[in-house]
Length: 321
Image 1 (cartoon, rainbow, N blue to C red):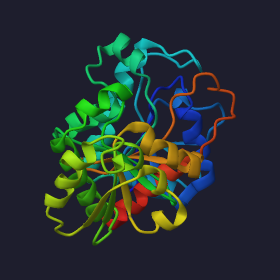
Image 2 (tube, rainbow, N blue to C red):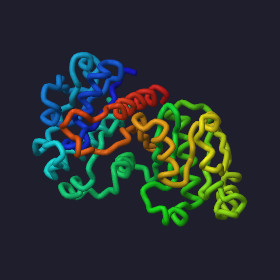
Image 3 (spheres, rainbow, N blue to C red):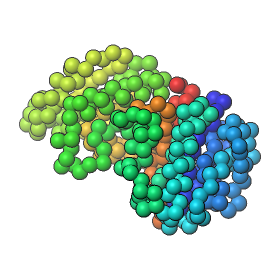
């Protein structure tokens, strides 16, 4: 790959800047990336190469952290987000996307943001990072995947109360989730014929209607009617038997019905190496699977593993694409 990954800085008062510095120190030229942010926000003593062009990152990364300077309104105090910096966080994301869509960078990797600071400082109008990226990409529907070497999972419904899942989980939503996931595995992961396993909603996938009828009434019929063109689809499977090693070997991604059904298995199997991938965008986007961690920001103890894995996965996806 000849183009670097664009890494947006995220919330500068969180752990994003120090993780970027540590990721560069551990990767150097193995996974070239360019950090988009205010150099003042990086840890003191970080070797920095300020660039005019992302292409310069390939030569610079062996000696210093490649940076596309992106001035912010204020300095950053670890653990204390400043709404004055909200506009800078937003425009850094926009710049990373624009560079990737223009072909100057290979993919977007995003450090965590703090939604309240963005609302307070810039009237941020999106529920979160992913919805903002969807708007920038001009798409209405995207899918969140959590990926590691051991497992890929997709929650069909995400950040809603468990009591809302049965009504928010619709045939249309599940159908779209399956289609976007299959295309993403093929086009961005380079899997020629993806294998998808769909979990049931109820315990034991309803056990013939004894523990719920959604599987009988519409989930199984929907899966049977979806044309399996270029991918294989099985289910609904009991979720409690889908994630042991032998079961995982039979599919490339698990489609789950709600947040914890998907995230508990991957965080149990590979807590530090899980990567958030957004499928359905016209560009590659990965992100570490953690937040801003204000409680430890600036202490030099944050674990860079998830960010490093997110950068590596972005590199692999760009090569596969």
